[in-house]
Length: 49
Image (tube, rainbow, N blue to C red):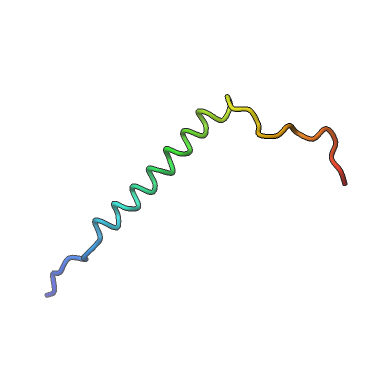
């Protein structure tokens, strides 16, 4: 019976947890600060076709 553990599983999972945490923090900050911010450009009065 071969009972070797998979090498690198913990650090790889830790990296994905960090990536997921950064994404969730970014989304939370977006929804907190986006309603208060001004648009970078005013909307066009008429749409050209």
